[in-house]
Length: 121
Image 1 (cartoon, one colour):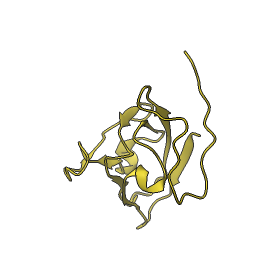
Image 2 (cartoon, helix red, strand yellow):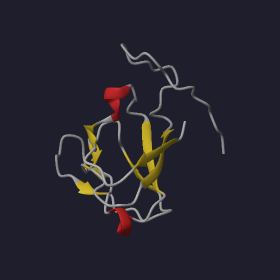
Image 3 (cartoon, one colour):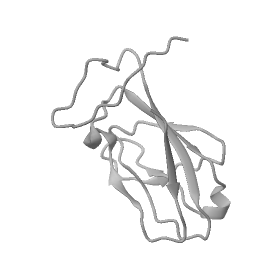
């Protein structure tokens, strides 16, 4: 399901470096991220490596209301602390890319599996 992320400022809390496979997401998913606050106000962006294991982290640079996509299951990403006086808000979700998405896939050890729905356009 879509997730609303709220990161109040000023704060020293950040989103740690990770790839989504750690949390049970499969390689057949593509991440979409939509910032709902102005980057010029919060100066807090989502950082991602260009390829799995590359380690060349760069901000995605999406402007408020602009979607960006990345392969979050295998590319590591993070959000630094929001040191501004503004609250950073974003929305993210994942889409299964056929033929790479396996609807029957399960990761051993996960305790919760999001309900999946197929949408045909």
